[in-house]
Length: 386
Ligand SMILES: Cc1ncc(COP(=O)(O)O)c(C=O)c1O
Image 1 (tube, rainbow, N blue to C red):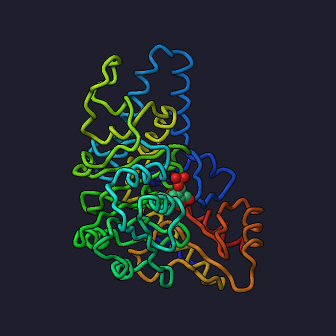
Image 2: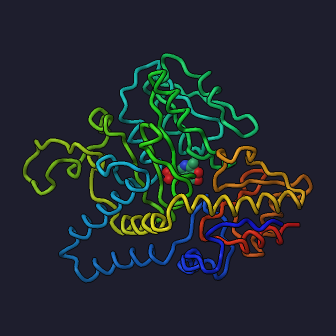
Image 3: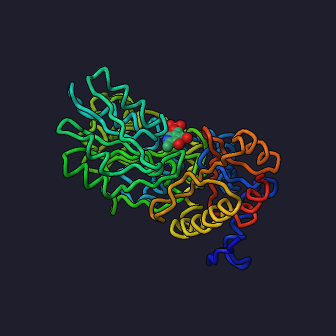
């Protein structure tokens, strides 16, 4: 088995210190960040601090709310290269996608193009537009790859939006967002991205990828709390995206309790209609700050080195890698595999008994290591396989 030379795989490197921030490493080879990730200590501490504040200083709770949410938005903006004004906090990915779906000016006969391999979170908000006469078209996957040409072939002059994941949840295929954004804009359509399976693991800069909307949830690759997330709305769309839900927090002065004629904020916070999940925001902020302190490029390199090792070990053992791996730029933190003779449920059981945490998705096993995992975690998985 190869031993990939990564600058962060040596014992002196900062990654070994970072690993200590994840108590889960003491008991498990946790390789399931595409599902729900464990907390790091800084995330747990930030949330505990937020709770302690409320326990002891409740009269100042509004200050805490403003502090936590402002910082979370700011961190989210830094993570994806956005302006803070283009970020609103959400409950989850679906919430962000629904803000977009409910806010665009649909006309009967319009259509949305998505892919057959999307997680349902990125399908139902668009199918829900059937009541407005909007249909959803599904691009096929060929050898688990969503080809830009297949998306293009489904588009026509009534295609208003393409809704696609940064990384496909089951196979780990990394979509070509630049090509998709260019395609959409050349055809007068918008690109809305479900970023939850990629952002936090792989770089995505909205300054370089001209997508229009990006919805993300906290608990996977960001390693933040369940029930948190954010939506990026490109600045030019903020004034025109209708607010399907409106509230006092979206106005220009939340302290003006007796006026009902306030204008809406001119930033994406107009989509935050009411009070937010403050403890969650504190956790989300700490989670993103930890990733930023390591550096997303470093994280991506680390994930690629670990998944290289995994792919090689799987092949040596006769497993079939489902994830498209021929081109590195199409890979992500997700590697899915199967074996012609081993039942996936039995594989899952073997791995669970060895304290190796993965997911079973249909006929295959999905492994998804993050930057703080090490070679031993990968080897634990490989050694537990029959
Ligand atoms: C691609 C993708 N989108 C969204 C979600 C979850 O959606 P939400 O954050 O709305 O719960 C998942 C969860 O597995 C996912 O894989």
